Length: 551
Image (cartoon, rainbow, N blue to C red; front, side, top):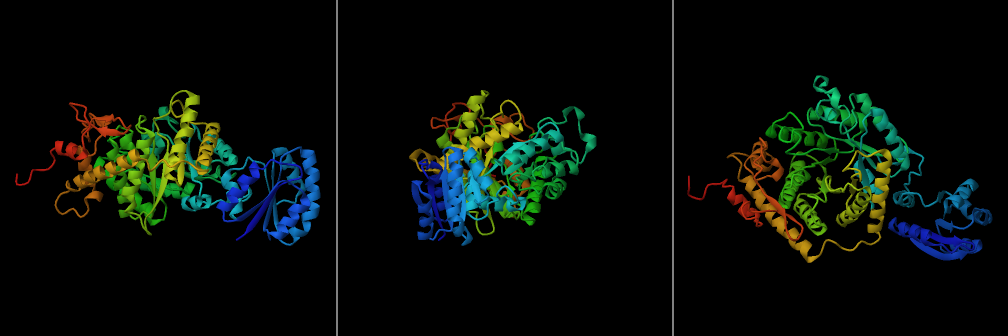
């Protein structure tokens, strides 16, 4: 095992930073030896020889002038070791670090501003060092593995003009705090990119950046080619799905696709497709990306919870999402878990819901179908007050870490008021990173409490009831009801899949009634009494199936 020794040099007794460095070194697989505070230079050299160290880390956090003299003396004593192949790093306050860099001896100098994954990456022997873009993994799965055990961070960003968006991406990339720029485009870009005649000049830039050409996309991707070289992804669109997929792959090296099953059509008013036709199109998009080894996020379940559907339908549609992704050749499935949705959901019931999702999906995973967890804060859950919103962001991300996500989708704290600026994105990511770091240091177990486990098991049982009921809707001869667009569409039209916000919808019944129960979960209730009802009873009330022996 590689050995790193560490000490605070000279009269310096401040060791918190160097102890954190050693903790990260242990995570990266090093044997660590701490020599202590206020260690003379000659003792550090002796310790390095005694322990056969491959890396020596020293720290100094006092006066820069004194530190420079100590470091100059240390370098004179350590030069022979460096000639033998021993590597040296140094950590200190920014003023001390600046003088240490000028001496040109240390392989790396850390001043405390570096992202934790940068330090960890260095210790793993694959640190980018802020110099070479090719050192930063440029696919989602590689980046996840490179940054492990910390999650990669994603954030939406899109300003009203391409120019402003590009400059903002430059600034975000230089800050080095974001791994995935999730490009937020306006509705015309999503629906009418290939149909200029359908675009409306009056809504240009509404809700996102108004990209109108392949060169617009290329210029925005080029803006990421600096700093920590973040990946880029964007919306799958609501029309011309496959043409957009080809464009995204060529122009922005899309990190992964996000596509729903039942949405982005006439049912939610976001596209021109009929319900069943759009389901088939979305499945073809999954297959297209699957053939090319690009991950797919079927961002289906939260669309139901955003419309106040009961938690059981979130779990059931999570299963449908993963099932369809696997059936259509996706090898890397990103499971998006939107917390705080509906906003009144309690943290314990939120965790129970997500654990139930992971349990029902778990049976589908295997060597050819890998599941990656992505968590995010609820889109509608932010308070208007900016200080409260910041607190909510940090608290939500901390709770999400109970799921040990591979990706944390940071939702801007300004979401309730306005689209995030570049400065907002940077601030959001720093808040999230602090919450993640706190959780990584030893978060209490939030997954095994009696109430959480009981609710998780309840949701699993009820989701099985829902899935079985969908299967029973299939016409004779349908090979696989759970991938059959006609059967899936019928599940919406007859009310098996339903939400209160779908009332008066042309495609859904919108008759289900939900309430928050005394545990803080979202449940279906009897419309007349307001009493919670089991999923089996709710489905029986729809009278979808004839009784045995009755024609």
